[in-house]
Image (cartoon, rainbow, N blue to C red; front, side):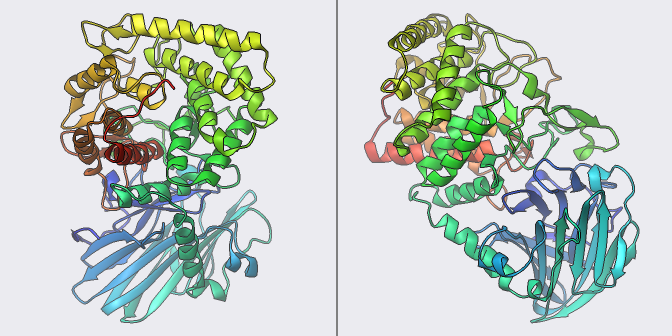
Length: 620
């Protein structure tokens, strides 16, 4: 629990934007909802992560739509997760009593689901009075399709609200009576100590739509959901520093994993700004190949090999159509076409426009993804007795592509507007060829191909060594022959390009600490990237710095760096994409998978450094 915060009652037009850090997240491994400490669901896309939002007050406080449950008068609130789960509990304290709101989404498998017909997606909100009496208020204001159009609900009864359009239907069933409040519904009810009511929101895409029945209002759904998350988390093998943070990060990654395909989305939100009022507002409800290696490393490091295998299978499926050329980003079904458009009717978080859906990064050319993908295949490979034919085809095709194109400029890991000769991309081309050789040296690949990969790999290493490291700057730099720093090179020892203790890497880490770091937080770079200036420090980069320091054996500095970023996590241990170093404010899409992947890998590296007394050798 965190310290209670004083809140006052509010109506739909009085609601102000909450800090990004104010939210918890719940989900069912298909989509996710963000719940504020006021008990308001301000973000939910249906039926999947990248579907249209039905509640989007996160991006427009007045017209975005929400589903709130809170006391009528002044209250204080606290939020926490039930231990070992993604079940969120918001506790309200009022002058006359206290109540707790339990929010969760039902994961669609398990014994309960086999007994009872469930909607395609189901969100459960249970209010329990724990002391005295509490007067509660419900506001249900759905706004389908990101608030585009007018879709009034149908009051089927005082306890049943319906909403449907073009083949989908949403039921809200409430044990407390509701009344029309166009275009939604609202209600008030009083609970005495020991009393409870449940509201269930069900989404379906068939007729007749399934909707909750009597058993849904018992404790069974909660018990099943708690059991699912705790049973899953019990597989975690990590028992080192920052264990609670690692466990929360693992639970988040599982929540962000799209169960039908194994994909892991970058974040469940779109257009949360990297600078309030700025234009760096992107849709992160998709899957980036650049995250592949570090994602698989994190899952493998803490015992979740099944999830690593599922993510690898999704990656093999999604890249099949475009091989040997890999796209940068795919949706949860492995489709690479993610046309981007702006939603001008939405105000944007605290006036940060434009609000975007889709992501034009899918059309960029990034060479680093080949190294990240093949390094990911390599990391999962030892758990497989033999690479599948799909995996062999991917590895061989990617290696041949890199051997032909590594010298070309690209947009780089940070998706720059202008193509350049990025050092990180060149180093990752080296990683791609190195891993391809290791994976296929004993397979049915011609000696001629293997020798070519080795020759090109050595050529890349020579170029990076000579042009990627600037003696005057004392660091590996952003572009060949350049002088500007870039935090992406912190991944070079993590991904195996260079030994962590190499004097050039040691000096690079020191240069980044001195010139790219503010109050312990690391910026990606300080160069002009073609967009209006203004962004926070990049959370994952700070964890990469901690990871690199641990590999070099500087455990205390690694811990200091880790702590500098983790102390900015919200009251639930969740992190966003970026952090304002001056204020600690969370910025960007939230919660961010890559930030928590960096946390897991940095914690594991610190644990290993403490156990061995120093860094591990690389370029093995």
